[in-house]
Image (tube, rainbow, N blue to C red):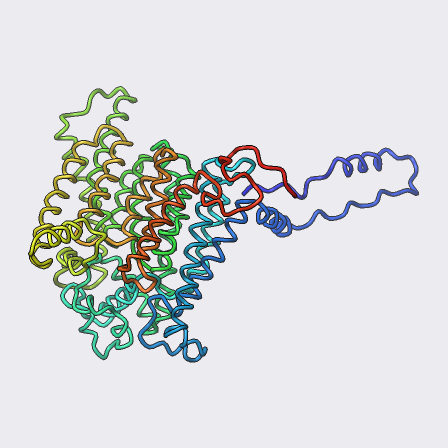
Length: 557
């Protein structure tokens, strides 16, 4: 954030210096100017000034929301089954009875505070609050402010972190995680195994070799210490967050969006920070690498972009959806280069596609080969591809195939377990068809190709056998780069708010109708609040019908 030059001389000081040089009386020496202060003091003053602004108030509210989530998580989050640390601190009561209720209240108050702060920032970003503005550097600073408390939370809204640690320990102990589930750890890492969700104890690892190497490195250093391992995992996710902070505004140069809006929507979003950092999901690395790789390809660094995306695939396979579309962008750039250098038309499109596609495949294969060799696995090196089907064990109503199956059971006597395989098959066929169609349809420009990736991700999220709230971070990172209307932003704000509120802090989906209804109401209020201050008319002493940006009612300062 730009700061005023505190070392610059003031006009009075300059005049004093001139007078000193021309004064004929030597007995009247000029008084030396007082020191202007250190750059650190200047930054502190600037930070204090920022904290008094509307955007500073929002940043502070979000920080305290993250603190509440962190504290409440010790009782209501994805806590360990046996937590000696809480017992030593005499805080075990937070996990049971009234203590659990109190912890849950802290978490939900923190979530509401972060959503409120995010919406207020969004109102400033889109220019809906006269007299307030926020720069890109200030938003980057707020990302750090909101993230810091979450680094010390237990896994929030998920227990996947314990599975990551267990799979890393398997590789550390020379057990192939592509052949066996964490249950094979047995007494080798009983503490880690004890905290893995029962549904995943017999499931092989669905993640790429790079992420297994990360897990092995962490468990080699931290051993079976779950607390140290969880914090180390979060620290490993931070490069993914940094890549998103860099890449998402950078994408707007090619997609037509606004950098501040993109960073606010895709990175400062509580759905991203609370789930990907607080929940310790490897999507943080995967999405950051994918977004950075796409940005590099758009900037004509094709090989480097393919390398970065390939590393993302070696974390989680979903990033691979972008690769076929990036071949189109590479071909577009090659055509533009030949036209600029008067080298004539491209050779036959099929030849060009084969050449560029082969280069992309070669880069991808090289990255995977190196990562796989580094794991030391001698067999089933790509067994993680077959393990992707393990998501079928998740049955929740966020997935369209599951919703369709439930509807069928409501109107027919058929049981869910008989209908679900068929609805999943139908949606899988539809998903493949949409992916192929999108790849062929969106190939004429850079913007079209990225839009194709976005369409493909939305199709995967909606039509896959299992859908979880943090999956929406995949398309969100790309959608933020486009020029979005205010109405579209309102819809996205409402959707993200709803997704934040429909899962319990311990990772279980909400099944209570009252909670679900309140989540919908909160989503509507958040969406309306993006363009209108106090939509519920809770403030007194001002005309509530006054639209945002109108003339403020007179009142005390």
